Length: 254
Image 1 (tube, rainbow, N blue to C red):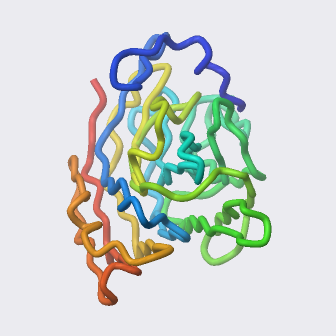
Image 2: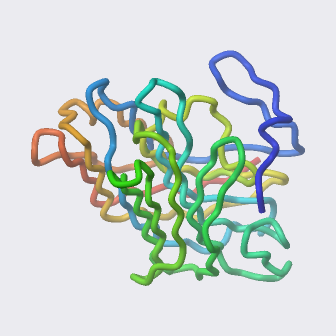
Image 3: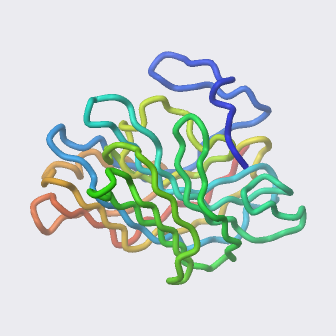
């Protein structure tokens, strides 16, 4: 499903946007960024182990590892955000039936509209790997989503350079509300829209790697944890940052 709500949302101070819908809320998150001024994220990869669906199975829930970007000119970039979506009925690109108990895994980028790759129906327990890699030949970010080692969705977008990353829980559409996505480099997000999404089980992201264009030795100082755990470390002076396990704690929407 395509997102076009941003044009309907009023801007408030600080660049945030207030949604005009019956329900909207973020859950727990692991986030990093922004990068140092002389560096940017060239590649980021992580593997989400899909939990059971939210209970009760209400609303429009998205789990996503997102990478905010910025253009070399200094202009605000986009949000590169592969998604895992749990919805009731036709609330995702997978067009689930009302009683479907799968997740919808899809490559996706938000630039004011939601752009999706091919959607794939994944099951709780599946390992979904999200890889975002800058392509020097095209100046695009190539996004690849794999389920249990098999590529299921791809998308390439002219999105600028990686400026931040994290994970979270949020609902769709749109799975993005900030105007300046360079403020988050690799956020893992949990987002709920349309209706209370109930309780989201604890879940994990494995083998996270963030590769900088040039070393950013102080990047770990940007780490922010909200209902999440994970140790961001480097073994090469800040060129490559890794997190063995990110745990996002159980969260109940009210």
